[in-house]
Image 1 (cartoon, helix red, strand yellow):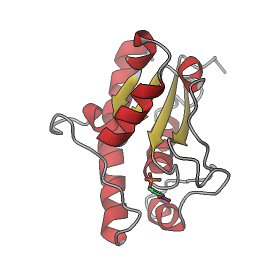
Image 2: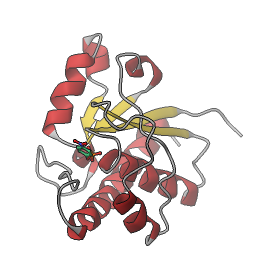
Image 3: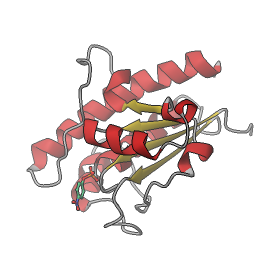
Length: 163
Ligand code: 4NP
């Protein structure tokens, strides 16, 4: 076992759909790459309505079909996450603005990145759409996006942290 080289927190609004999905997909990719002990992964929400709850059962069910396990409980982002994490990876432009506003310094503000900025070929500013009020296709789309973007994020971490 070696200590984590890098600490990543995925962030969305409620921490029950998009960021837990990204967290689960990233853990899955890290396990496959035998890098689970090198990268610490969590997720959090900018809002606190769902703190302590498991991920949305629709997110859990769709992820399970791909072998991705969502088993964490929702937590709310606070300013001290900037000290605990190297990267805060957000789902959409609203999260980006909210998380950047919480940053204690310019250096810590630079830790905030859109998830899809790691997705090869995604448009500048592309977002992970919120599936909460929609149908099953939205949850599949979130998984498709998270798989592509987390793959790109893993490549970025391998290069940046020599994993
Ligand atoms: P998430 O989706 O940000 O992807 O977890 C949402 C979940 C719950 C709510 C909003 C978005 N909500 O308003 O309760």
